[in-house]
Image 1 (cartoon, rainbow, N blue to C red):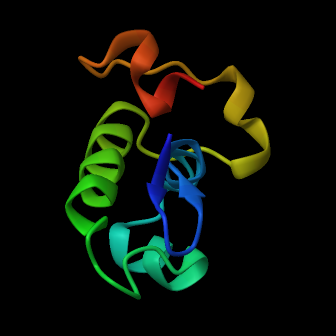
Image 2 (tube, rainbow, N blue to C red):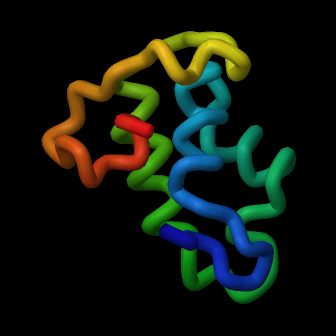
Length: 80
């Protein structure tokens, strides 16, 4: 799902960076999420919080082996 319409950033892309150990501020700087209209900030922060809690630190290139423990299950961005 697209979280940031202005920058066309998906929840999966945000989750991938969060699983790599990046916090919201770092992800915002790297991807540009929530830097234009700001309507996506709360959703983007929620994706970061869910994924950071379930997979504290992982390399970006290894994201296919990670599994999510979020309550979101298969619909959660962390599962991708």
